[in-house]
Structure formats: structure tokens, C-alpha cells
Amino acid sequence: MAIENFISVDYTEGPKLGAALEQHVRNYDVDIMNLQRATKLVPAGESASGLIEVELENGATLKSKTVVLSTGARWRQMGVPGENEYRNKGVAYCPHCDGPLFKGKRVSVIGGGNSGVEAAIDLAGIVAHVTLIEFDGKLRADEVLQRKLRSLPNVEVIVSAQSTEVLGDGQKVNGLVYKDRTDGSMHSLSLEGIFVQIGLLPNTEWLQGTLDLSPRGEIVIDARGQTSLPGVFAAGDATTVPYKQIVIAMGAGSTAALGAFDHLIRTSAPVAETVPA
Ligand SMILES: Cc1cc2nc3c(=O)[nH]c(=O)nc-3n(C[C@H](O)[C@H](O)[C@H](O)COP(=O)(O)OP(=O)(O)OC[C@H]3O[C@@H](n4cnc5c(N)ncnc54)[C@H](O)[C@@H]3O)c2cc1C
Image 1 (cartoon, protein in one colour):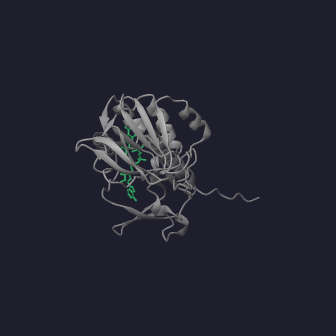
Image 2 (spheres, rainbow, N blue to C red):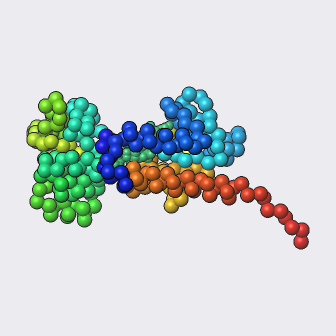
Image 3 (tube, rainbow, N blue to C red):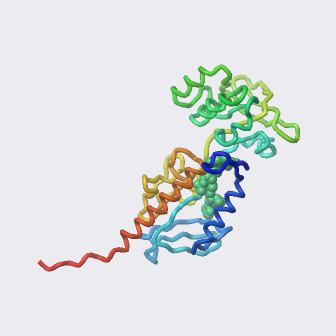
């Protein structure tokens, strides 16, 4: 739960930061509706009210001139025995957040795409040894990242390998089992940390077909947080913003709010009078 990269705060924890955010919002005239899931977004041009509509799972509909979407993302999991049991007890998903906890230890990174290789490069500077495991026969990361990875003395790369189980002593991770996909043989690695880097899934399934999403399902935004739908803005991990971190999501939230404010000013201006010639 520890957060140590939120600038100006040495150390905080997720629930504490969440509670502080909620308290701050409650100081203003803002309605907070917890435990509600948005299921559909109806553009102003298609709604009976002429406003943007957000339909909720409980049957209610919110109507507004602007909407800011910030539904976040979830890490794609390996789906192997031990992964959930040892989540945050050695199984980690964020190298920038949790890497320092593994200083001087042996870790593996699962996934040989750009995020996996970047994570391995990053971790190699902190931990004793990194084993990068890739399912495919070759790494999929950019060549420049692969070159950097290969130059590091404390990194081993294993391709054509399928992770099959996270091992632990009941308290924390102590190993990883993988299958060599070329001959079916099983192997185990002794280590203390496993960083799963096989993708981040944006929580945008409910928006498909409504506004522009990237091939990865991220909401496409411009520099003002504007989406492809007029009046609809977005911020944070659910969007195409390249780095998924708290401080970035907060800044993006401000950008989207200012973008929405700007949109309101421009759309509420009285229609210009026609001056007779
Ligand atoms: C275990 C873990 C540790 C992390 N540690 C750090 C760290 O130390 N430092 C750091 O900078 N970053 C860290 N991150 C990343 C950080 O949490 C995110 O970058 C940040 O929270 C993104 O903010 P967000 O508002 O975009 O999304 P989120 O914080 O994910 O918030 C999205 C919210 O939308 C809700 N939601 C989703 N779908 C719907 C829907 N259809 N209707 C209504 N509500 C919906 C979700 O329930 C959630 O409350 C960590 C992430 C994880 C998973």
C-alpha cells in the first residue's frame, strides 16, 4: 500500500491518500455517489435531453453538459496458482512503485514487451539479479531497449517460457515455476520477487463504440483532456497518457477539469445577434 513517489509527501498509503482526497472534495459543493457503476455513455447529440447522459448499473441516469471519465485501469494477471495468494507479498505489478522493496534481492519480470524490458532495465539497477521470462520465442520490445537489456551483467532472459506457478513459504514468494515451451520440461527459479508486466487493461469496456479508443482500449485524449466526443473529457490510467502514476493522474484530472470549464464557457455564450446589412 506504500506510496513513496508522490511528490511533497515522503510516505503515504493508498487508503490514506484516498481518504484525504475524499475529505478535500467534500469541502466543496460536490455530490459523491459511492458504489455506483457507470454502464453507458450517451452523447449529447443522441440523447433525448440534449445533454450528455451517463447510465448507471442501478438504473439511474445522470445528465450533464460535461463529463470527465477517470475509470482507471487494472493489471493483467498471469492467472496461475499462487499469484493472488502472494500478491503484495512478492508478486508486484508496478516496478516504479515496488522496485525499491527488492533492493539486493533476486526477482523475475514476466513479459518481454516494452514494459517488461523497461522494468527489467530499471530493476537491474536496484536488485541483485533479474530473470526476464517471455512466453514468445523472442522479445517484443523495441530493439534499443533490448540492446540496453543485453548490456546488463545481472539480467538473464528466458524465452519460450510459460510461467505456471508462484511458489512461497506461506508468508512470501520464494520461487517461480515455468514450462519450457520448446520441449515441455518444467523448471523452477529461486527468487523473492515477481513483477508481472503483461499489460494494463483500461476499464473502458463500457465505452466501446461510443468514443475513440486506442487499439489497447485507452480513451484517446488531446492536450486538454478532450476526448473525441464534444464535452466529454478524460484523465488518468484509462487514457492514452503514457505514464500511469498517481501524480500524473492527478495533473491530468486538473487538465480535464480545466478543459471542461473552458468548454462550458464557450458553449454557454449567447448566440451572436445578426446585424442587418
Ligand atoms: C498495487 C498498486 C500500487 C501502486 N502504487 C503506486 C505508487 O506507489 N505510486 C504511483 O504513483 N502509482 C502507483 N500505482 C498506480 C496508481 O494507482 C494509478 O496510476 C492511479 O491510481 C491512477 O488514477 P486514476 O484516477 O486514473 O485511476 P484509479 O485510481 O484506478 O481510479 C479509478 C476508479 O474508477 C472506478 N471505476 C472503474 N470503472 C468504473 C465504472 N464503470 N463506473 C464507476 N466507477 C468505475 C474504480 O473503481 C476506481 O475507483 C499503483 C497501482 C497499483 C495497482
